[in-house]
Image (cartoon, rainbow, N blue to C red):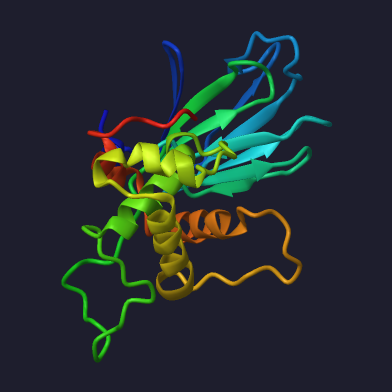
Length: 235
């Protein structure tokens, strides 16, 4: 399926596929709807999806349930849609709408984003990267390992511990002191994360690194290939 050729959006659940042109909409929920979700815990009407030119919007018509829209191909990106939220814009080209009901979700395919042409005029001077990272360095492998659970499941709250990173990157022969040194280097020099005003959990530094790396798109799902030859962490 070629997303970039779409002039509207596609909604898919199992074998059912709905196509919407810009300006059109569909409803979903338990009961009479364009997209019927059979789980009895899903309300009716549960929601509505509106197609716009190159993006789409979702309305949560439930009185109590919160919906999550995540990007299966992104770096842990997701949008939370609370009850009663109308016409929330979704920026993902590929998205998964998750309802609280067990295994109740569907996919939405949107047009490819419009990007600045590579030949467009550039700004004067050379811009220095805000976060200069060497993807061949050991510290970058450690950063990818920290982000791995969130990259594989955007809703995961798992943050790998130092012993888990040692096991994950066993072929590097790193010990606890070496891993802690790389994490501290990433936090102080590379990503420049700040310590919380009120120190709490001991994993704040690792959590902050994951937040910055994924939020700034410094570590992406494609970087997981760097870990494919290594033992996989449980999610």
